[in-house]
Amino acid sequence: MVTGTLLALSSCGDNPSEQSQATGSEPAVSSVAAPPVETKEPNTAYQPAFPDQTRVAGLKSTTAYEGKVLTDDLEKPWGLTSMPDGRLLITEKAGTMRIASLSGEVSAPITGIPNVNAEGQGGLLGVRLDPDFEQNRMVYWVFSEPLPEGNLTAVAKGRLSDDEKEIEGATVIYRATPAYEGTLHYGGRILFDKDDNLIISTGERSDAVTRPQAQQLNSSLGKVIRITKAGEPVGGNPFEGEAGAKPEIYSYGHRNVQGLAFHPETGDLWENEFGPRGGDELNRIEAGKDYGWPTVTYGIEYGGDKVGEGIQQQEGLEQPVYYWDPSISPSGMTFYSSDSIPEWKNNLFIGGLGGMQIVRLVLEDNKVVGEERLLESEKQRFRDITQGKDGALYAVTDQGRLYRVYKK
Image (cartoon, rainbow, N blue to C red; front, side, top):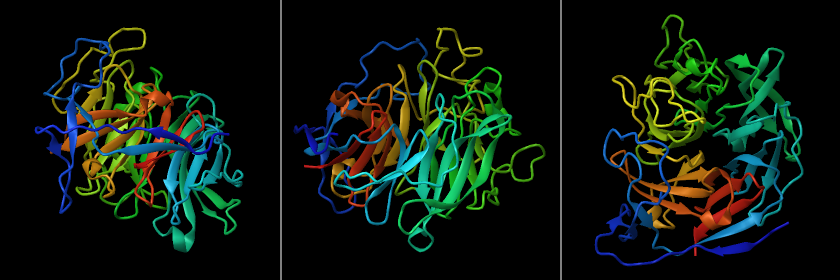
């Protein structure tokens, strides 16, 4: 067990051309301009659709901050969310939930959770507490459900017992059909919107036979889904009443959505998704829009061939706000809304799996204007990240660690 390991992760400088990220009455605090953080050769010579769609200028935080390993006693954690008292509810891929204190103590596995298929990229995935958790103690989660006809992305809910040892009355409320025998690309993130409806991400299940379903409105694969707490389509969803379309679909044309977050000021929904070899994307999600996969992409097949016709832009298909080539394998993400580090206010933080870092993106007018990479020296696969009740960032890694990142 590792507890309390402290990392010095600060950088400093004073550049008159620095751009302030402070808001409101906070004093201006700036990040230092730097060369683009990506230095590896891209997989393709594809040209972006607009300036700074990829390899934007780098930034360095000027505020001194620290990263601390609270524990490494987790087993392949996948999702995490803050509890009202500041502790963290964490899912583990094999099918367990645990509660971690901010001193690094980890609970015994919580029982009562339906079985998952943890092969490949499956398992117990994203998790969120009901907005009324303090009254009803309800927990919602996403998992890869094994069925006779194959596996699928499912959403379940249940009550966390008063003694926090079990989930009571676990019930599956939604299944992203059709089921498929593969074990890849489940999506699996979950959020509550301002109206207490659920936003769910799914994947297109990766294989050539399922990939086209990302473009098909009669399939739940490769979609962002909006449902009620009971698992029903939300009234007013963009394809409500359209013949042959699933009314729970909010947006489509996605490959494997691994990050979902609402901007703390604009309320806009943002997502990230895996590309194939290159072409990881950051998108701002709008209702009813088609985000292009597999028709357009900035990535290529793992063997080096073009995806489809090798198109990157097509009328009627949304462009990513930002993309990465080579891939960083973006995963869970969160916006920073704390006042603790003003230069981070409203910045987006994304866990990197293949890249083994936390990515910080600065957004202005829905464009990325700067990128920084944190904790690269840790060589960890950062699976999910959230902002805690104390304003610090908390992140989990595939290797079993829970990190706290906060102002020094």
